[in-house]
Length: 258
Image 1 (spheres, rainbow, N blue to C red):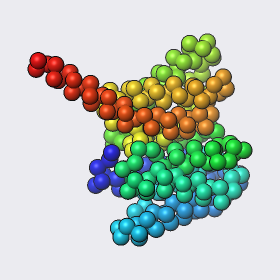
Image 2 (image 1 turned 60 degrees about the vertical axis):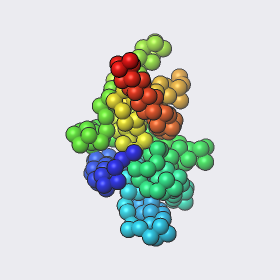
Image 3 (image 1 turned 120 degrees about the horizontal axis):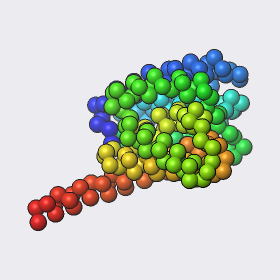
Image 4 (image 1 turned 120 degrees about the vertical axis):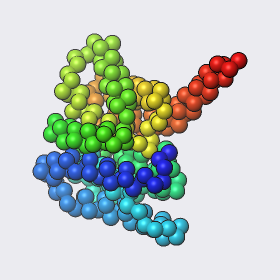
């Protein structure tokens, strides 16, 4: 759980980190960029404003990052009502019902994208391009420097996926792997709200996420859907992983004094 006083700073940092990927999307989008972006922002901020009004709190803008991530991975031909449906459910079920950003255990963007694919089986998420992967790097560096994502998770995911490829005897292309994983790994799997928070737990969480990516991808190339569902399932287990790590540390300390 993120300390409440730091949530606004996390949102700001993530928003800045998302600027380069959005710039790539703006230059490559074929079906228009501004309208889906404004629609997603309107739905996300609208729900946050409504919940703030009902709870008699000051309005917040944490839904910005949810909207931006969903817009990047949403298909270009997605209907605006489907986009609004996904963003609304993600913001409400992944954030607002728990009391706001930092109190839930699932990334709202991950929840939104998962529910979009589940609710509309004909929808296929946009697949990352090399330009998008390269545009993710500045945000990766920024979030690492600020301590908002863990290098342990990054390494654990990449090593697990690489080992899985080796065990299957499949061709391993680092550039293709980086392209497929970069955006989802940084902004979904490593999300500071949903990822494990203990150092040992981060290794386990990352390995679990990497294994789930391979499971969901199957014999096919790694897709955005595989990364999204891996992020969703691993985030569900993140609290349990951290709890078991704390129990293990407590047990070790008790035995030292026996």
